[in-house]
Amino acid sequence: EAQVTQNPRYLITVTGKKLTVTCSQNMNHEYMSWYRQDPGLGLRQIYYSMNVEVTDKGDVPEGYKVSRKEKRNFPLILESPSPNQTSLYFCASSLRTSTGYNEQFFGPGTRLTVL
Amino acid sequence: AQSVTQLGSHVSVSEGALVLLRCNYSSSVPPYLFWYVQYPNQGLQLLLKYTTGATLVKGINGFEAEFKKSETSFHLTKPSAHMSDAAEYFCAVSEPYNQGGKLIFGQGTELSVKP
Figure 1 (tube, rainbow over the protein chains, first blue to last red):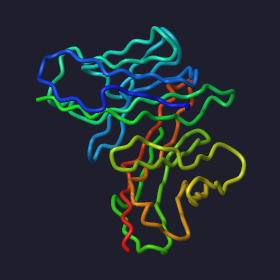
Figure 2 (tube, rainbow over the protein chains, first blue to last red; figure 1 turned 180 degrees about the vertical axis):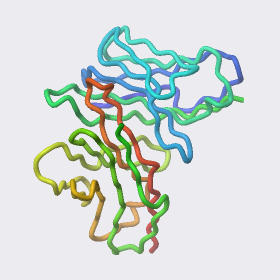
Figure 3 (cartoon, rainbow over the protein chains, first blue to last red; figure 1 turned 90 degrees about the vertical axis):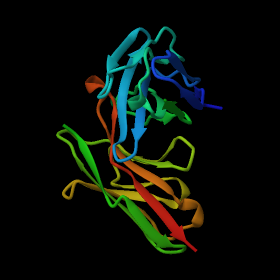
C-alpha cells in the first residue's frame, strides 16, 4: 500500500530533551515536506526537500532540523524542544511532474507535547 | 504571494442538506488548488484538485468544486450531506516546485452534520 508513515504517533517529552520524528514514504517521491498544525494558524511548512541531500527552510524552521540521506526518509529533529513546539506534525511527500505541481500525500500525524 | 481564505470556521448542516464550503485564493500565477479533508485523529486526505482544464472538478465521496477565475474562488459542494462527512476541510493552493512547492492552506472549516 502506498503510504507515508510517521513515528511516533504520540510523544510527550520535556524541555531540552532531543527527539526525532521519523517519516518514510514508499512511493519513490522526490519531494518531501514537514508541516505543523496549530489551532487558529492552520498548517505551516517547517522544512522541505526537493531530493536527496537537498533541503530548505519553510515558513517556520526555527528550532528544527531535517536531513535527507535517502529518498524514502525525511526525519524531523528537535535538538532542544521547547513548549512552543507543542503541536501536531505532518510529513508529506509528492511526485515531481512536468507541470511542476502535484498533490501531496500526508502521513497520519505526530502529536507532540513538550512540558 | 499566494494566500487562501476560507469563509466560516464552522459550518453546520442537516443530514441530506447541501454542503457549501467557501474558499477564495490569491495568486499571481495560474493556481493549482486542492481540497483536503481531515477526520478526527487522522492525516489529511485529498478530496479533489484543480490544475488545468475543466473548471468543475469532481472528487471522492460525492464532493465537487468549481474553479472560478473571475471570482478567485474554489468552493466545495456536495448535494446531500451524510453524517460521515463531519470533519475539517482545508482549501490549499500550491506553489510551483521552483518556488518551494509548499501547500498554502486556509484556516480550515469544521463541518458538522446534524441528524
